[in-house]
Length: 335
Image (cartoon, rainbow, N blue to C red):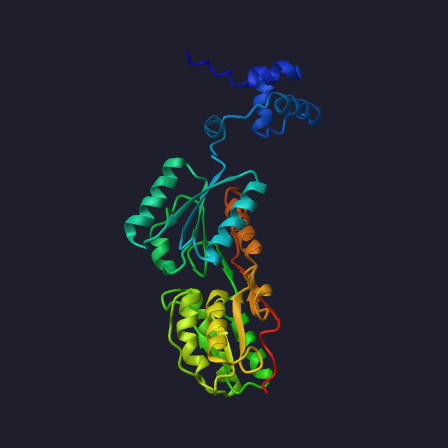
């Protein structure tokens, strides 16, 4: 015979232990302003003693808020999107919100629309879209107009949070030119990612401003294998002395290609990556790279979304999160 599990404590159990009415307990968990601090503390202490958990569905019906944020993202196996989602979840949890993540493989209309429909069925309070290789206007077509929304990336129609994918690559390229390198080669990311195109634009503009030659570059993907395969061609060219890679994984493949060729980093070739993955400081040699502030990106996404829940809040302003060049031992003056 199966034993019946013990009943979970309810509002009336908490009220009985705290010596208040069950309506007062309900007000405490709705954050009602007409509850004294002393009473609130007594109720919360009783709830903790009983291990009482307010029912999320009931609270949503009572307040009109599910306290859940929906996140739509692509390519979540990549370091950048995964780091941003982790930062969103941390900041949402700190603000007493849950997160529900839809990780999509296809940018097709059906996939995005299906994710949004599921979020609407869940009653999410708002949606954060991390479009990745999906153009912003395409991503926005599928977002509901009646739900607060934040887009990670530039757009005019909704509040946005953007990382610096242009100025920092331009600074990184200038840094290599200031070390005496006559030009800087580039290993870009995928051509259908706006972030990759912005990093390429920053690299190209820095060379043009300095009057340096702008070498041809072939788009690839974000993987170390892509960096290795394209890097073998650069490593075999004795005129190549400096390379800016569109992310640290690409730079990792490039480092191995240079090592295999018999050349050395940074003695023969200086290398700069992008992202500052946790392993970047422990590569051989430690990698000079551009650090993205994923924590700030996640925090601003959550703050801009929650700010829209208040009817009297001012229109959110776009947030641009700066990136930082971190110099290590993979770069050196031209010999």
